[in-house]
Every structure is written in C-alpha cells, then in structure tokens.
Length: 387
Image (cartoon, rainbow, N blue to C red; front, side):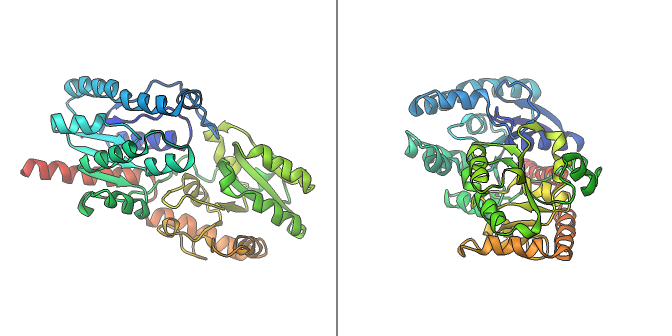
C-alpha cells in the first residue's frame, strides 16, 4: 500500500515518538510512505518539547498565531497535491492538528481515501490550557475535519465519545491506543545494575518519565516521602519540565534534596536504562481522554504502576492485575497506594509481570498498531472499489 503521511508536528516530545514509530512500523510491514510535514531539525532528546513552532506560539499574539495555523493549510495543501500527483498514494493518513484543513480538502476535491488519527480534542484542550482567540471557529473546523475523514482513529474510547459527539458515525471510528517498540525497551540491563550506575543502590526508586508539569501531581510524592522515611525511597524524574524548579524548591524545604533526582533532557534511547531502575512507576495524574506513552514504556519493562482509576486508563489497566489504581475522588488514595506497593514486594512483582503480559495480550506495540491501521485501510479501499 502507498501511504501519504501528513502531520504538522515540529516538536520532539511524545508526539514525535508516535509519528516516528508509526511510520517505521508501516514501512516494516512493507508499505511505501511519503511524508508531508514542517521542516524540522532532527532531535532525539527525551524531555524536551521546545521547538521553533512553540517559540513562534510563545512570541506571537494568540489571534495571529491561530491565523498562521489556518493559513499554513494553504502551503500544506499545495505540498500534498504535488506529492499526491507524483506518488499516486492509496491512502492519506493524517495526524490531526488544530486549524489544519489541508487533508480534508484533498479528500473532498480529489477523492483520496482519508484516515485521520486523533490524539486529543485540541479545541477544548487549547481553550482550557492555552486559550483561543477564535474558539468557535476552532470547534467548527475540528468537527468539520473529523466528519470529513473516512476513518477516525482516536487513542481511547473516551476520546471516541468526543469524535462521535461531533457527528462521526460509530462505524467510522476505530480506537487504537498508543504502543511501544519492544526492541527498544528490552531488558538489556538489570534493576540492580541500573541503580548501581545511578549511584542509587539500596534505594526503593519511585520513577516518573516525561515532561513534568504541575498538574502531574508529583508534589504529592514528596509530601508522602517526608512522612514515610522508613521505606528508603528515592524519587527519580527521567526528563525535565516547568515543574522542576518548584519541585526542587519543595524538596529543599522538606529536607529531601538528596532523595530526588532529575535526569534533565536525555537521548530517548537512554530512557530504558533509567526506567529499568524503577521499583514503582508513577502516573499520578492523567488527562481524561489520553493514552499516555509513558504507561506503555513502564509496562514493557514490567514495572508495577500506580495510576488513577479513570475510564481511559481502565481501557488498558486492571487493578492489582497490571497496575494499582487509586480513587481520584479520595484525598489519600494515592498515598495509600504508595504505602501498599512499597511494603509488598510480592505484589510489585505480580503487577509488573501482569503489565508486561498485557502488552502481548492486547498487541500494544507500534507494529500491532500499524497492522490495525493496515486492516481498516484495506477494508476502506475494498469498500471504495466495490462502489
């Protein structure tokens, strides 16, 4: 199959991981891929999301940036049109972004079958977190683009409800969660060796990976550590983020400076060696519709996970089988989960093994995801042919 892959992502965070891994998996299945995307400098750093796009966003008035996002579709359409004529693809596969209508126009004007990957309801997300100058326009365009696609691929069933609410028929919605590249997250280093290399041997390591923000709730871990010294815990943040300064300040005020470490920005291929040191993997908070990449990294390395008991995570996680879930409506539930796992190594091993088994059982790999996309694409092409 010949696939024209379109995205507007220029960051080097989890979005880039998803894009790169899906393209690689599709190629490994034998598909020919042509990519249309913004020009960007290659950056293989984990924990770094600062790109030229974000710099432009941060230094432009909101209304001007949104106009630029919309007008970018003119350039994107032109580039898609040229490559479509030369490449003659079977499918247009697009990663959804706000105010991006180029793919929908290509589909409308030229009839190219259109598969849309949706990772978040960006009109709502931007309204809540960053603000929008044109929220009604953003919402209208979002619905227009989602309805225009032949197939929409949300990452959770919770997000699928958003898609359906915009008027997309259920038979055009196929949920495909994020995944993992097992070849990059194999157990090539033991937990003891990983701890030794970090100078943390003998510690019970509570670990978190990614771009840490205030809403992740890592501060709760520090307060818990202050009151539970007997577990000899150490908090390891693999990455960086805007919450780092406040967390380091809090650790100092609680006299926990020696019990928290930030790796800062590191190459992505080094992440498994850090995660290997974790005794407990933390997902203290989650966006209600998200499919967190770190979750699959934890699971691939058989780490016992503490995570909120939310509908989107329950699509993958089951309490005391492959994670320990806490009730977000109960103030001390997270701390109780920490106490339970820290004090029970048998439960940690059981949950970690269950997490790794779930990867295989649900085919939560990028190759598995590419096969699911391949399946829906082939059915779409067949239905179009039969018409």
